[in-house]
Length: 201
Length: 201
DNA sequence: TTTGGCATGTAATCCGTTACATGATTAG
DNA sequence: CTAATCATGTAACGGATTACATGCCAAA
Image 1 (cartoon, each protein chain N blue to C red):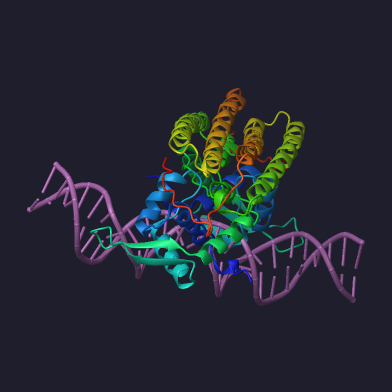
Image 2 (cartoon, rainbow over the protein chains, first blue to last red):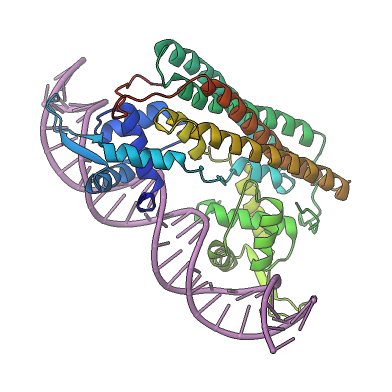
């Protein structure tokens, strides 16, 4: 019945963007993603154009030349079948994420670094995270104001709040980490060797 | 001078693991990563064995058969040159991360989902995040206890704290999001169409 | 007129996981 | 004896970014 298995996550995400944003060109899709969901999702042209093509061949989107534009634009629109598939995908529990974090790994390995560099990374990380959170708080206000009454507003705000809370948590962690390692003056033996293997979770 | 550019992140991460854990086989490396840094880093055998080989050919690690084992194990150890390269890498500012989050994307698109499913995903997400945080808090206690006095302890604790604070933030966000969208009863027009394009960040 | 942005697409490359193939050792 | 685990490696595949190639339209 459900042919969800035939589609990659990128394709389903594009389907969602088209459902949300209406008829769009591949170029538009890119801009839309950058402007709205870039905090937690990204797609490049190398994904978008082939994906739109596959979605079209399976009947989940249809395309037509854009008559409103002087340029030669091909706009894509989601079909009823596309909406059904999107609904099926949205009903599936999201895959658990296992992102890599270079900054946490470097903190974990801080004992092997030149003294001070880890704190420096953490300060940068904290200030960027703080700035991001503040920026997103303004976005939240704007989105609330410009979309008052929209039935999607609560979902949009919820997704923005994710960025805010996670950014604040990153900043809070970085500050805490600076405090934790601040008392330690990393020392190395002559060749910097370290034989400890006792850390286990 | 610095030949950092020749190495992939995976290879440098393995170098860090070898610096931290001492002489290890590829199999050990895998187990070590799973046991210690799996919250924020992962490597598969398909990466590990070729990576160890490349590191060896560049002189950053050396290997020997393990005489202490009845099995035919090849153990790898970081060299002074390896430590130097590791130090250089640790001094470089971590690459900014841009992880994808399926759960946030599905929340953003919640208006196009069957009523109730998004809340359900968020409840699952929150309970898993809460469980994870609680588990990591116990890990923190254990690690503190078993490694009291170790000069690496503060760095290890800092990395565990990242998992705790981020998990707590994920749970807090999910609860907040449930509240935000709880008041909304998603309604669709006859074909579920939605023409709004006004969301911009 | 020339630069920048619109617009589409492909090729190369990188990075990573999964599956497979193989075999030895050890615990039950 | 036999199942689980230790141990090493490769091949296939998937997914994503970057760079490249091309060209048109609009504004300065």
